[in-house]
Length: 486
Image (cartoon, rainbow, N blue to C red; front, side, top):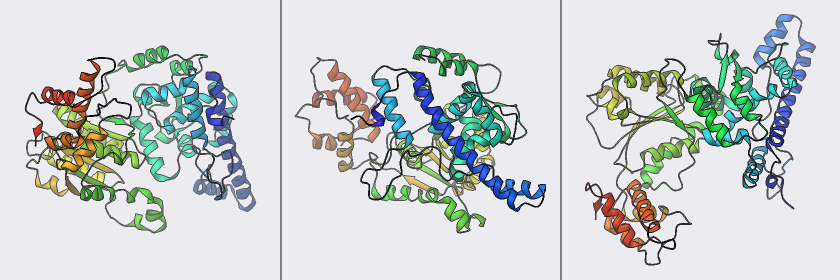
């Protein structure tokens, strides 16, 4: 008998009904909690001032657990296989729907833009009043506004976030860096609001029409995104990019000392509420964030380290390459980082800011580092070799991590990782010889393996990747003498 996660949705509206039912349960839970607290307040309050004060410190919504992972069944420790969360069941059904050719609007949008679960649920909350006015009334009650209407940023954050870290990351994502806002698919009204938290979330008409279509096809989505990407005013383009990493530490080959040093950055993110609030460390003027300089040649894993850290901490990675920006854009980027406070940041070609030839005032860069270290953030700077750095900026670094070339044993692992399981390999492939003959970085090994695969595929439909393809790929990639032979 197929499990719940194997059942495909009949169509886009069947999917929407499932998601809206989940949202309805979440709102009813919040509504019930709010009513219970109101009764408690009415029982002990002596004046209207008491009621207002109590509402202020308790908050209108306090969920006992987050909305993402609502279980449909209770789990006891004796069960060998815990029940799937709602999100896990949903992803299984979406995959089954794709396999049967059923088009689903919101999942297609998430895949196309790389949206997080939080962003997906934000769109769902904004879409719900377009389907049923009951959601507007619930929003109004939970926001203390009898008129109802659109959900506020405050309500969205309270419904979907668990803890301060999630709240800060989600607020920053909504305020500036989400592709939904960058493309104008989601607006926050009025603009500018009294505060961002009281602004109301409104989806664009074109996005609403796409999400509510009977058959939301991919061409319609591409047309929507192309139209949204066209510039409307003279506002400068955002220079900070973001991605949701999918690779952790497992395939990252690093010296044990380097790996241990980097993994030591993780604990400050795992129990911040307990340490900062319950244990009182939040009241001390200590540094919370870290600024780390990664130094290593092309392909030694600098970007992969930042991605693995973001993946482990379940955060998006924000990044920019300083070498690609002119002086005006570099100044704009500095202001953008300060305003948005991305939790995990990677700045490539860091010599553009750290060296004595920097176009920016060293005091401005030092001030940025100080600001980042006062927040719970991780800032990775990367460059391919050591440069002469401004003393003030060097003192602002928490660590300088040198990434050496992989050893022969490390290269053996990297070569075996470079080929996907389904890639056809000839039986005479000599892994030991590959690791021994070329002194390469992980990025160089992957580049040669990929080129060899194209060479093999061009021969015959049944060709497999062999040593002759790898030797030829090395020669083709080495036309500038970049790769080293041991």
